[in-house]
Length: 256
Image 1 (cartoon, rainbow, N blue to C red):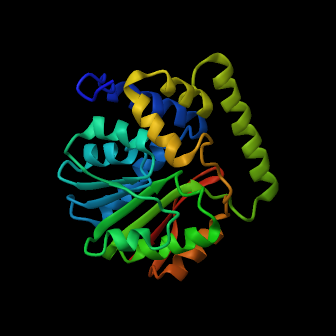
Image 2 (tube, rainbow, N blue to C red):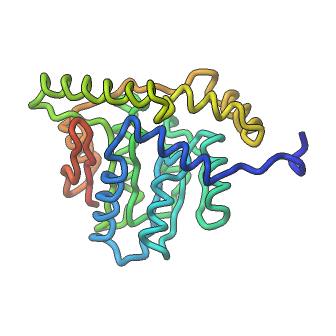
Image 3 (cartoon, rainbow, N blue to C red):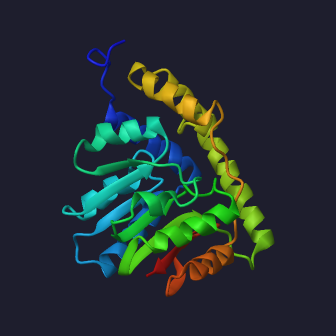
């Protein structure tokens, strides 16, 4: 099928579908993103330069532009299919960067002469090994203007609650499985199966498989919040701490 006759991506439908799939894992997802944007509002002049790091379909970018209509947004990800949905959503309203964060110094090399007021990421960096994630934190620190902020929202259990954390994870798992059982939400594998049935995503899915293989990248690096705080301090941020928490998840911020 030629590019001239390829069906258009239904960006609105796929954004909605992605949101519902993600909310099955993260029922307080909107709350966490809203808290992240509150921080951005507090440290910028209302027209922030924002890097949506490992941003996928652009969930954070979409909410940044709703909140800050004059924001300059750069969306970075390595997944061709998710980026395709993002491009169909935003057109030329934002900048796109295709980059593999697993590559050493990838950020520093690409953004040698560009700086941001805020770098935001959510549920996206857990696939990086601990050593590489620490290095990414250091690379990010050099991309942020003085007074700017980096926020990572992720699974970050509180070290002092090991037994309760496990109970909370079990509780959330049971809630999530009930959503799947009733058809209220798609699971992660089901979402990708649905995407594979859309002719508009076929070429992008082929590119994704060529780049990533058949398996989706999975989490191997769930670290307690204390690990992230220590890593951000080591990366050179002058202030570091938790700006949001939801059960076993948290958003940590580093101020440059």
